[in-house]
Image (cartoon, rainbow, N blue to C red; front, side, top):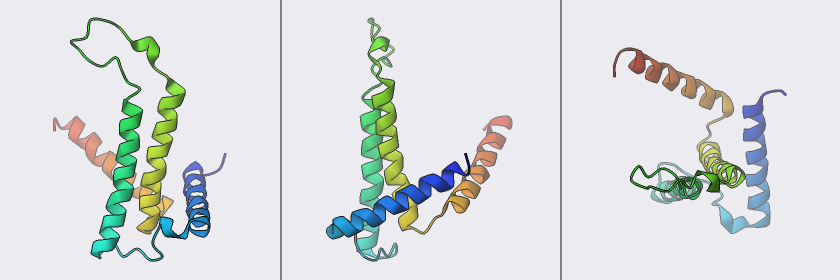
Length: 124
């Protein structure tokens, strides 16, 4: 299967290049994360990802502890997954705009994973 994370980053980069080519105004030419404009653009990308996460959450209808009726059969796994993919696409775009590659993300992920495992073991 190869490196799946690298494949995802590559696919997202290709999409972003195609988007810029076909709809130039969709993203700025240069994104300076220290500038007001750059931070606004990056914040918007992050919020789009959060919005997609909320769309995924709309498919979870059986979570209310006070609800007497069971609506678990209404869960559409495919639609939920599609919204999750939309969210991750925005988050991957955000990382790519910031120059974060799959290796850096992988390292940061497992660094944090180790921290939260230690917290769990030590009664955080």
